[in-house]
Image (cartoon, rainbow, N blue to C red; front, side):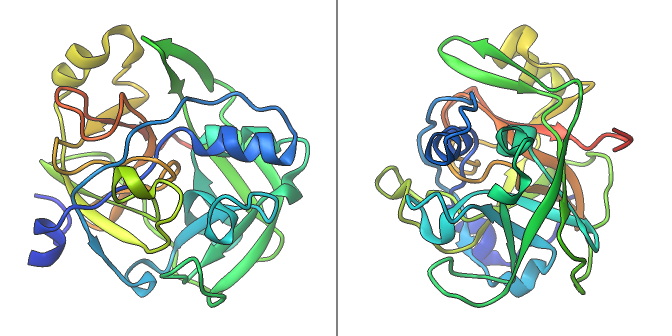
Length: 264
């Protein structure tokens, strides 16, 4: 089960980011957020056009020059004026939502196409917290809602609970150890879902199946600058790229936040 991908999508490695982006953005913008240290890049995916997922958002800031278009996270349009992302991507902007901007329809971040919208409000799950796993920061209840300055006339993504054996992750993150800052193209990758038991064996008490689930392998995973992006199952948003020990590291699948009731 899981979202259908082309043969090329399933066979070619891809990469995505998880946890370093927001700390760099916060430092650049000067708001002093705390987020995780860097993860290595990932392998296992294929270029895709932004038209594949018209609801997919690149989240960034003009004040973050280290990445094309200032991108450091991703998100998903769940209502005409609402984007769902990771809390660790947005918590630093709680006092200044205008520090963020959201872009749809941009396959290559070095281009100026697509639709870019400002952010007027940020809400973070009140249960969001940061902890430690070895030397890495971990994120719990890692969910945030961005309210856009204006609604956009684009399809939204539906939400579903994780199920089956395979999902699809998408984002603009790193595609190798050498391009953690330079990759600008959108990729997607088919990732195997891990059991809760396997995730607990990897992360111990830092994994809570009530708030998260795991997916990924040594050949398909998310990585730097993919935080907040979607984990899709049968075309529906089942999880939010959150954190993990490294990327594509044996025995340590990526951790994805479950999408809660969004009543915060």
